[in-house]
Image (cartoon, rainbow, N blue to C red; front, side, top):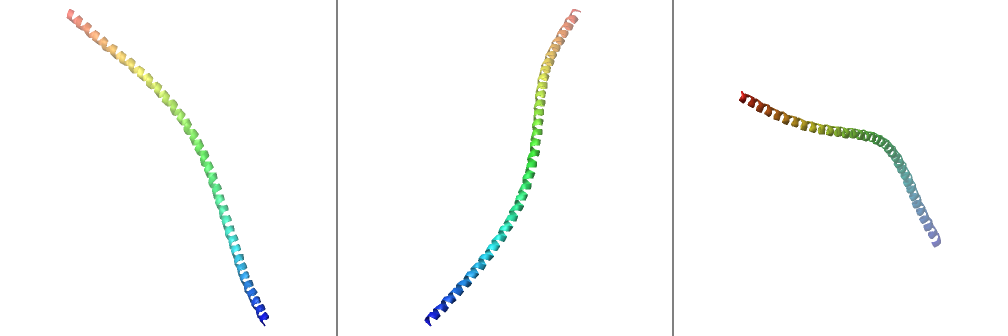
Length: 127
């Protein structure tokens, strides 16, 4: 009997272990399917994000191209403004020379007027 009891105990232990193994296997299978579902969701999410990032990259490339064109335009405008500044500087220099000439003419006219007054004074004194 002792042997039969031991066999029954072993059978019971094996049965219990079998149930535990089945429970663990079921839990592992559930975990595996959950992980696969989560991985699938993450993959789909990452694919959507990649698509959005590609769209953003395309937009940024378009903006960069526009900015490059604008930079070229601004460089052209800057060059034109530099030319205009040089022209205005040249005109200012010419105006300064003209001002100096007018000052000289004014000085000569003043001298001529003084001379005229002196001549008139001398003529009126003689008469």
